[in-house]
Amino acid sequence: MKPIEIYNARIANGELKDDSDQRQILQALQDLAIAIEGYKPRSKFLMSGLFGVKAPRPKGLYIYGGVGRGKSMLMDLFFDASPIKRKRRVHFHAFMQEVHDEMHRVRQSGVEDAIRPVAEKIIKEASLLCFDEMQITDIADAMIVGRLFEFLFDSGVLIVTTSNRHPDDLYKQGLNRSLFLPFIELIKSYLVVHNLDSETDHRQNRVSGQVRYLSPLNDETTGRANAMWDDLSQGKSEPITLRQKKRQIEILHHHNGVARASFDDLCKKPLGPGDYLLIANSFRLLMITDVPILRRENNNEAKRFVTLVDALYEAGTTVIINADAEPEALYETGEGAFEFERTASRLREMQADSWGT
Image (cartoon, rainbow, N blue to C red; front, side, top):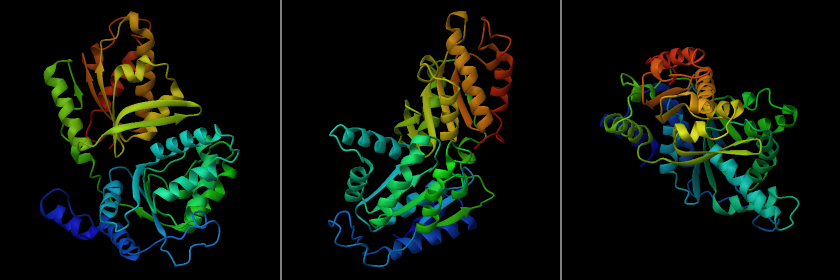
């Protein structure tokens, strides 16, 4: 089935609501799906430098816009309908982590320029790459991604990606951003930029009207949290690794921009403000489970929780929390009890339907 046919079928069965702005993007995706039928890139890397890309190839797509507008859903329709067999759909953070890991492995064999063999491996595995939530927040990624994508494009790999930002706003105000600008021009040369400017936040409907702060911790609230997560993740969650300079942040449950982590995973580990900012800006919705009552003996964890909530608040991230007490009763005693009043107030504010996604 073509992407538009799948879209129409889901509207008919009540799974989706018709959106004229989505249909414009969907038409571009369907046109691309038709254009790449029978497309076989001839890579100068896989052909020992004898051949470049001979046949004209269509440009890929860069779809950006606000959260909850359906970018990932539309890309998934395209990916499922794409006739290309060697294809891969992956969250951009996860992809870049794989790139770093593979570069490290290649360097162990004495290779100085690790980007080229990593690119060749990617090219052999996929002719179509679909990236979810492209964003560049780490200077290490910024220094790698330009050369890597140049290899991919030169080899005829087609790319479709979603992002919350226009290409011109990628890595905005980042360190040494001038070195990153050629990558932005590369993106605009090989990908057609589309803005999904829908006024409807479709993702909001999944949590609209639902209680987002569940307490106390018991079988009932845990069951409700699990049910909400199953709905949000569609039963397809998987781990993801975020990179913060040379550090790695493991998030055990993630799918299409929503994530789930326990209090211990987020606050018992030695994470700092930069780590929490990265988490807040990487996901549009975060479920935090098993938040205990905070006392003097876990003051360090309480401080990290305050920092985490501040980061989520500033980023406008939707938060679902399963805790052992209501926000005002969550911090019983300790040095930060007074300061926690602001955190409790923010947790209350973040429960409104109008908040975040």
